[in-house]
Image (cartoon, rainbow, N blue to C red; front, side, top):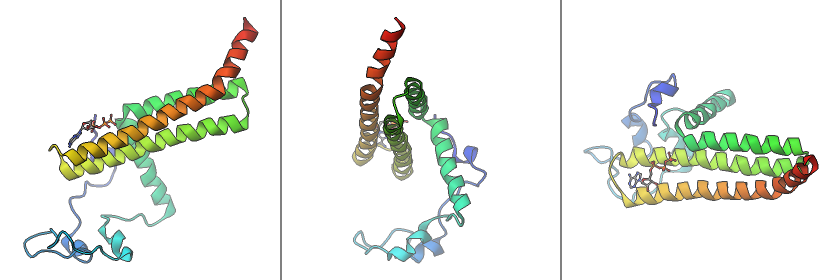
Length: 178
Ligand SMILES: Nc1ncnc2c1ncn2[C@@H]1O[C@H](COP(=O)(O)OP(=O)(O)OP(=O)(O)O)[C@@H](O)[C@H]1O
C-alpha cells in the first residue's frame, strides 16, 4: 500500500521547483525545463542544494524529516515491520540467553543494516516511480530488483549471524531445562 505524501506530513505536496531556482543550476532550453544538451556539464557542487525544494535549516528539523521517512517506511513497507519484529525477538533472545555484549552488538549491527537497506530500497523505489511513473522501463526494473536484492542479502546475512550466535546457547538452554 502506498500512502499519499500529504497523509504523512503536514507539509503541502510540492509540485516542482520554481523555474528560477532550477535555471540557476541547469541551463534551460527556451521551450521548457529540459537542458539543451544531454551532455550539459554538471553544475558546480556548491549549487547542488539549490535543486532541493526545501532544505532543513536546523539539526532538529533534519531529525524530524528522518523520523518522517522512517515512519513512512514503517507504515507502507510490510517487510520493514517484519524485520523490526524479527530483529527485536533476536535481540531479546540474546539478552535472555546472556550471550554477551559483543554478540548482542553484532546482532544489532546486522539488524540495523537490514533496516537501513529497507529504507534505501523505499527511497529508491520512490525515485524510480517519480521518474518513470506507471510506465515500464528496463532500467527501472534493474534499479528496483537490485535494491530488493540488497535487502535480501542483508537479511540472509543477519539471519546467518543471529543463527551462529544464538543457536548454540539456545540449544544449551533447552538441554538444561529438559
Ligand atoms: N516502472 C517499472 N518498470 C519495470 N519494472 C518495474 C517497474 N516498477 C516495478 N517493476 C518491477 O516490479 C517489481 C516490484 O515492484 P515494487 O515497486 O513493488 O518493488 P518491490 O521491491 O517489490 O516493493 P516492496 O519493497 O514494497 O515489496 C520490481 O522489483 C520490478 O521488477
